[in-house]
Image 1: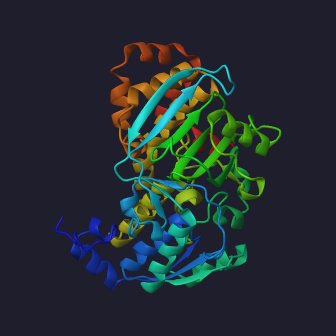
Image 2 (image 1 turned 30 degrees about the vertical axis):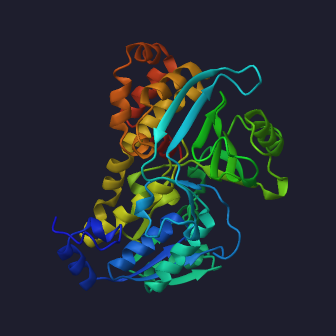
Length: 419
């Protein structure tokens, strides 16, 4: 490409000058509903292509927002200075993942992986979003925060705008407007909190712990005296008392315990992710990005970089007059990540920390973003471990998941077929 490179814009630098020029000449009007990371990325990219963009966000950026997703990878795709003033508190040199045989005092370490992080940060997400909203507003986007959108208003947007971007999360506003929320099944419940205390032994690394239940806990230090700590469980393994289980996880791992009043609770529904018929509606010109399209890694739960990537992909295809290719391009971009996550998640569901620990040992050393986004690196490492491969092949759950993954008989097809 001839490029725009050097513009300093992480989206426009992906396009050549002629594409941008032509896109700006035919730019239209777009509305983005949902002003978290996916929505901000969509507003930023479309505005850069000359579109007249209106952004609706239900909450106010100046108010407290749920601080999930504070460990962000591929941070260079976010057009902000990487300083604490803009919410980027700590640049961890690596993410350490430990796999234990249980969540009691008698547990043993089943495996460990250390994943370098060339472009990851632990953030104050609310600050990142507020600063990005200010940036897009300065660029001409009509930012309307504290402005929820009703289902009726959302339906009417198709008559008013040339493009409607649904960045609302799951179940998405599109699903609500179409009365199709029943297509979503299963969820993960997570608790997290910003905690002050002594994190000097953990800082600056980020830490994730699998403790032989369907979920994991984490500690993401922002400094030696502050961190985001949390724990999550998949439906079917939820504790009777969320907060007590959160406290127990902090105590057994030596982390400061958060006050109940400082603890956030949020749920992550699962649905027909990457289903072509749901990511783009050409009749109503509605595209789903980020969580609204069901995009989040089904093993790690990581979804910020995926959300931004989906929005930039949509905008690039708009610039290239190929928006109809969005479902297929999105599917191809995310498919292998989903397949690998679906297979590895089977070790959690089957209660096999030995297998999961072996996988972590095998893939240790790969950049934390590449583990998700470039799964071929992880697969190539696994192929060099014949003993581990034999364990995988001998396990019925893992065999079944491998077949399902590579015939696309996984989450989105199962849910779509049953709705």
